[in-house]
Length: 132
Length: 215
Image (cartoon, each protein chain N blue to C red):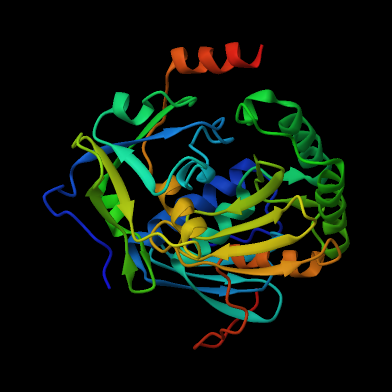
């Protein structure tokens, strides 16, 4: 069964994913930031940076084209992008079609295709203060 | 007729010549005729270019056919900044000590896990890897992941808090999420070496369709 996919969200749509880890040696978001967090039921993305950051203890956000998400395949299976079913805010989206078996592979693919990360100093500051 | 014979590749100028020729080939020719195994890790190979659009690589037997993209991948990984295992271990210690590598509620890996990583990395010298391709280290709730990658392929060793070690590889990882993993132990340096060699995209079973002339 193909993963649910809302085609009203076009491939050229730019979405944002929050990241919490330090960037890798190349200044790229690490693959683990494209795996589900403990508090996530699905891989969450948003239509705006602020919605992606929300109140999370994260460092910043990374942009990505919806077409790049849909382009990755796992055998015959592909991901989809839909609005979060239980959320009234249409700016919150999720990636469908990721299984426990394919999560690591998709995370590597998404990290490779993601755009330039943008760090938010206010979020970074909040993390530092929480550590003190 | 342009002719080049480089063996081994050691200098930046040699690298530049190779890159330039490969870029020309990429446009002109689908397949390069490459001779010699072990571009990675030994870097020893020679090549001969009778025209800008055609060339042959020469080295020791057995000779091998490569797709040009495989050659580029092999050169990329061979010429990428290599890390000595000592340097990687030093960086591992730095990463573990860096609080920015952790989530707020995240504990660092155990000493047992750290020691397992160091032991396996050090043993790579026993299978010909005194230096390793550019190495990426990441932490995740007690796990330590060591990743090597080219533009196409990815290999990762994940050392888990429970003592298990996973060796994972993912071909064409930008486009395909399908990877495969096997359990390994700290003794399995040969298997890790095999996977790192696989990164270059070299198919050791392939044979050239034309006769080869050693020069």
